Each structure stands twice: as structure tokens, then as C-alpha cells.
Length: 268
Image (tube, rainbow, N blue to C red; front, top):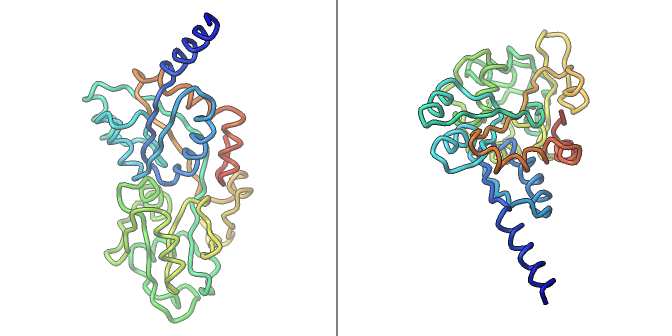
């Protein structure tokens, strides 16, 4: 009877020490975080719950204490750092993998490749018809993520050369919505994290020098041939390190990095 009581007490002690960890932010990182959480939650070391909403939302949630870990597909901004400092928080940054950003069109579109300059023209609204880039005489319908998204920020900085999106570009609340919209619209174009690729849309080859067009494959992204690759980040408050470290360590472990690859991203 004593052994049973001791065993029960030990179970209660483990349960008490197991943490409930909240992860919030980037829709790009969502598939990684969900899969990592699913495996981690079976270990008995804690329970992780994951929600999206965008990188900006995740970092804002870190400021107001509604998340333990902020997932971001872009680096933290200076104004976000200031807000965290003002809230008395010192944050740590962890890179958990890499992602290639791919440009997608409707499969009926005959255009297979675009230069960075052409993409800039399309998303600033200067290029309005597919015939201007070698396609059919058809209006371009451009879809973008909303401004709170890290994917939006990265695309604007690294593909559009920091130019503003055109007023005709349609903002979507999530990556899945872009995939769905492009799949349903003949003249559509959008951009997504490569892991969200779907047979209902077609990825384009991209050139940054106007000569060499590179397909957005994981091999090309890993080798550095594909030009639109970015790191994926997790941020957390140092005062919360003891709580979140078991989950962070799991993601960075060999098993965790295998999950990053399996979900469609690039392990570090």
C-alpha cells in the first residue's frame, strides 16, 4: 500500500512540475510548432498549445503576457524590443529552422518564371496584366499577407526592395487563404512559405539577376541557390526560460529537427 502511495505521490509531483506552455504568432511556423507540440506533449514534460495570428501578433502577446513563446518568421523590430524593455522583459532569440518563400500562380497560367523586378512591379501595381510578363492577356489579381505578418515584412524587404504594396493588392489573414484564393482565380498570384505548397497552385522559378531562374525546391533553398530564404525564430522572456526551455531544447534536438524537415521546412 505504501509503494502505491509513493508511486501516486511521484506521479502528482511530475504532473505539478509539467508546464503548460503557450506558443503564438507566425502562421508560417504554425505547422512546425503544432507537430513539435504533438510529439512533445506525449513526453510528460509539459503541455504545449499553439495558435497563429501572425508574427506581429505573437510578439505583441509576449509584451502583454498572453503567450510564453512568440513565433516569428522575421527578426524582431526595434520598436518591439523597446516595448518589451518598457514591460521589463529581456528576450532571447532562437532560430529553429529556415523557410523558402515561394511565389504561386493558378495552374492555368502559362507563366513559369519571373524576375525580382517583375515581382516588384506586380505587387506595387505597376504591372497589371499578365501579357506584360510574357503571359496571356489577363488582369493580374495579386494576393498578399496582411501587414502584421512576418511573411509580408520579409517579402516587402527582400523581394519588393522595401517598396509599398499597390492599393489593388488583396490582403489575406492567413497563408491558407492565399493558397485557396490563387487556386480559384485564373489571373491570381501570391506568395507563401514553401511548406504550404499545394497541388492546386503552381510555384514559379525566380531570378534575382535576370538570367538564372531557380525553382523553389528544398534542395535549392538548402544549397543557397534559391534566393528567397529566411530564418524562422522563436522569442521568449529570459525570466520564463525555465518553463519554456524543455520545449525549445526538444525542437533543437535531432528528433525535433527531423520534424522541421518532415513538415516541409529546412532543418538547421
